[in-house]
Length: 219
Image 1 (cartoon, rainbow, N blue to C red):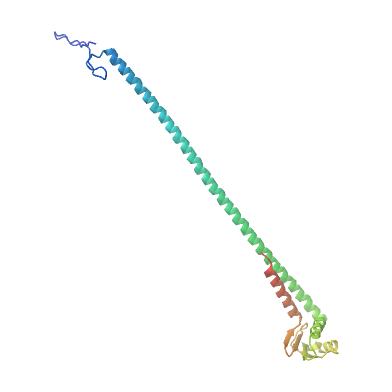
Image 2: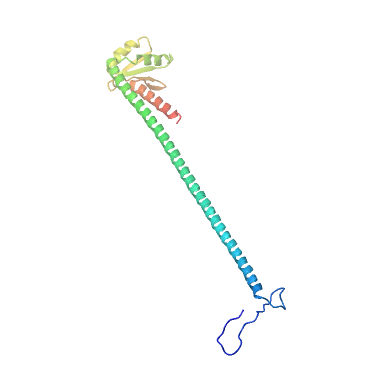
């Protein structure tokens, strides 16, 4: 290959190039061979570039896939935490409702008992005024449980002494009147102690029994 130069009167033509390469040492390399080597090298570079681009695309795709998997896993984990929190809130709400329901019914039962006792107290006090001897059955049972050696005294309102004396006729019972006692009051005394058989005492005992029953009810 020759390159024209400005004319200087000399011959500047370029002769065949000489390359040194493996297997070509000591001989003249022709331009065709150089072109062939350059073409092969260019093809190798193109192939390497193509493979590198394919690998880059594959790496990007893999990274995107892994990122999507991680994102889905994170979203699923967050969703599961939210579901677990919702379940805990529901369980807490149900337990709170059950506790409140039990407390409500317990309070309602207690109020019903109080109302029933209040009504009973009113009715019995009214009956005691109408019938001062309404407790004669209770008194007779108590007296029958005493022995002949017991000194029994029955204390009642002073206005009811005569009626009680007549009822207990034939019984070894001394009836005493007390001006300070209310209708429906009745107390039995022995040498061992005393017992209140009056209406209020009976109602108090019933109320205590109700309270004990409510306290023993399973929650």
